[in-house]
Image: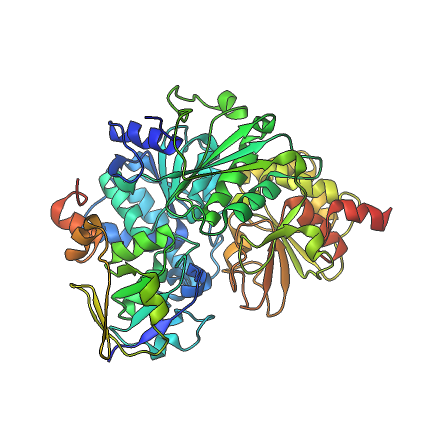
Length: 416
Length: 163
């Protein structure tokens, strides 16, 4: 019987063929812990009277509130450093960057691996062909203590992207379109298996990360991009790491990249996706470019391209938070950073920044933010009635200049 | 008598416990007091141990933050009923020993403020003279719940249920 990519990986790990619906306990290649749950993680290990079974398979990333915003956070982060030293655990400290970006940069997610992370967007590792999934503190602690975790082998949804993206349309627009078509619960308990065909295989690792990142917004357990293109050059992809042609899927969705236009996700549900034209003219108070979805160097360059020689509107705060220290260094070297600063951007420490409303860029009542992040839930970035619109870095940058929601193409008309 | 607190569809983890009230932001001893702070202010003062939370579809979507269900546990919630669950939230409930029942009909039948009794073992919900039968969670999860939580199960047996 044919197997999906999720079935392939979990079979390989279980050492026997498994199919959707079965419960399996498998070895875990990497356990990722973020600062915000580290305290719960330590407490649970203590309760189990356990230490990490394979210290080299555990990484802690201080990214969600970095640098510390208050005394409670400072104490929690001090404990992380001390605990890491005591147990020989890798700790990526303040400024290194967003967990998912950092793990990929450090080679801690590899094709065919199982990576469990204490952040729901751990589906991002699927970009390189790893079975990445988000879990809570208890599951993460058990995975560290035992070196294993349990899964119900998921059914899969097949998403086929065909063709090439038109100029001005990005992987974020494709990802938002995918979430719209699947809906916020369309892939619950399932793996989203992404096939890139007929030109779509040209999508870079970073663009694949954007796609895999957003799959959790359709409820997915994992978002697996079938290895192709750049991934084959960057990684050693095992021969078995492909779905069988006769694999069975719960449903199939096709998206023609060449027909896409810029998209925006409208509050307060991520799957409430429309063409930018639908909400054009909405006044904007803050624009945030960054996060595990769109804080990579290509995202900053795309924003800089729009912002070059322009200034953000006087009533707009443009916050830019590179996804990692590597991204920041690259942006500094190639002049991207200067372009952004000259346009009036405010720079934040590499990390998660304003994405979940804990520090840096909290929204006041009634404010509107265009963000390149992945969630526009009510109250997420601050006041319960503040609105978050999700878009690509290009649309975000254009909206910062105009002071209202728009695309770079419309800007040309206004400023020509 | 335990009371029903009823919420709608797509209630996310930011609704259940806004991210800015995570324990490491406000302290371990206080975070549960902010449960539903935006969606239903005053919830933490109103809810009593043994009360029942009822959700519509796709309950608990969003973040993997376990302190959302942990806040509910601290407030004395031992079971919830939803039409369907987001998967991380479902796992987190089980791991903490909160029983996640799934039923379209029962959710539709219950109203906010209803007074009910829930027999967790037998999966029977009583409202006045009416009885509703709830399908118990899968055996794997039940095995863990019998020990209290998955953590307790692993601590006692040194393995996962069914392994």
